Length: 276
Ligand SMILES: [Ca+2]
Ligand SMILES: [Ca+2]
Ligand SMILES: [Ca+2]
Ligand SMILES: [Ca+2]
Image (cartoon, rainbow, N blue to C red; front, side, top):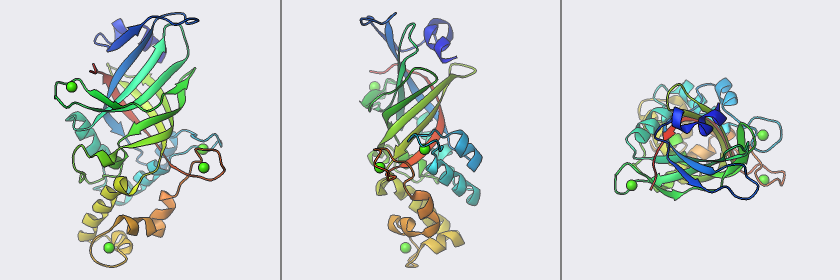
């Protein structure tokens, strides 16, 4: 389906934003880059869905989606935990500009996918690319081994508390893995996996969410607030045994035998966009 989408853009997507370039030696046709803007996100709602949306990012034959499982667990405990809702709203209002760039050459199975951070400083609807990481590449349905920009702080923002356009929300995730399929209309569904650090800045919205739940009488949140000051800090969150298990690194991205990053897997809807 993906091949058909990209080889017949004039039928499927009349407004495709392709930049054509001449074929290089050994390639069978012109190459193009299609820019897609992420318009909505879907995070796992259950352990089973976390497994279904995850990839094996480090080649040990175990599907990796630690943060997806954590988000599903929080959604099961807290009715108000809905980072998917808040991030999708910000993507829709274009306060968060998140782009996927897909490179293909006609007649080739090889393709590459990048996950980029954009801004639209002049608000003309055409985003400027701030950072496009390193491409994931593959010769079939899945492209792997890239570095992708991901607004992971918004994934930890279950209550919509994060300041808009927060630079600290973005991280460069390793082991970027992407699968793509054409949707029912002009949308493309991308399933994405990568390995992030989830630094203190990115985790802060989750602490703020639990502080708000603490005020609402959550016993789980009270168990995390060790000094009983009514505020859950990031160090308190990391120190909680229940949370620490799910915040432990689970993927070995540099092959030294020790897990060094946290995996996340999810899907997004994206649509062609003209970039500057
Ligand atoms: Ca694995
Ligand atoms: Ca612009
Ligand atoms: Ca505290
Ligand atoms: Ca390692």
